[in-house]
Image (cartoon, rainbow, N blue to C red; front, side, top):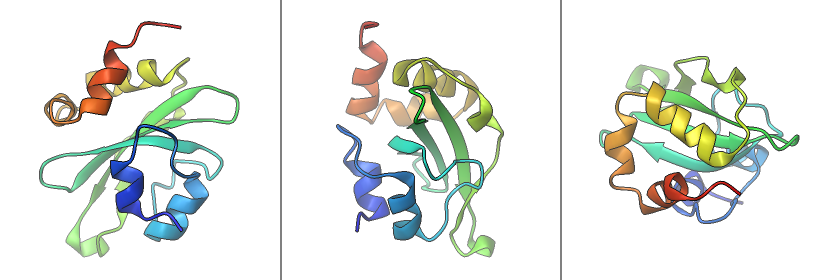
Length: 123
């Protein structure tokens, strides 16, 4: 079984299906379908906010921002409705997340794989 830690920190390749992530974590955003593959998770420095960037079986991509609070026993809860937006690539989804989530640019400055994805040329 893949742990949430492995999913969040081993992002050079797809590491797990969302179904495996759900089994490992116990709960995830209710707005991310089980068939979608989370390929990148970025947390803020307080570890209470997260952006999951994912791909869908049809090849489109998207993202969702989540939070976790002590009163929710640490469960991740979606805070926006970003997951319904459709982007043509991983890079486009991450770029949209950067524009939509205020704390994300600072987190990306500490995340080499995210920086690399944003710098990739369109293919």
